[in-house]
Length: 111
Length: 113
Image 1 (cartoon, rainbow over the protein chains, first blue to last red):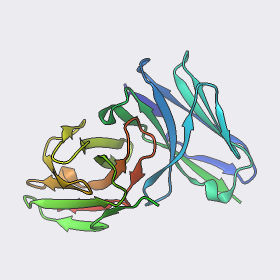
Image 2: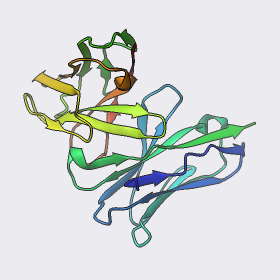
Image 3: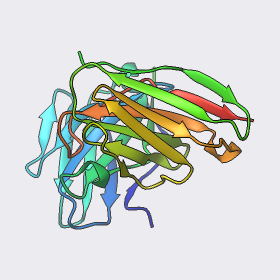
Image 4: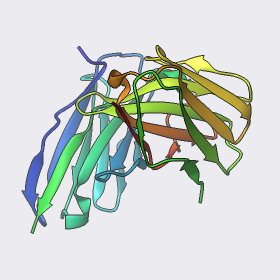
């Protein structure tokens, strides 16, 4: 079983829709959580950190559920430009070697 | 803006060749990383370095080595390229550890024939 698992998708939703996807992690000692965005044939870029209390950045909301060991990303009022692959990132410790990337969830927004 | 520059966008090499992938960052970051990204497998850490001349193995170091002689430059070396090393290679740097504030280079797509 992978340490970090994501539904690969693709999620195909109409513009303006709300879409959410989860990422589960297996190591209960995991400490920090992030969402990265990767456009086609481009490098990943940090989208947002995920805090225990949940956090929001415009149309994006990230949540952490430690009891069930998953993080989620909610995108409201989706735009065509939101089409990308979203990578979940989990760190086991504050060490560079303990950062695990999920394999990503593909999101496609249609007009 | 932090910039991480990888020397080549696309490379085609022959089996058995020695391959050098270069990465340079311009923000005085301590940590530098080499990942490979393959469909369905996500990003996998090959090696990382937290200081000049320091290196540590990641999850898949076999068949690779690295060099960090200067703070801004981190090189990945494929000693004898094999077809299973065909992949997208991504370099990243960060000021601290923990996954926050990684800046990636635009990647090198390496094909070994």
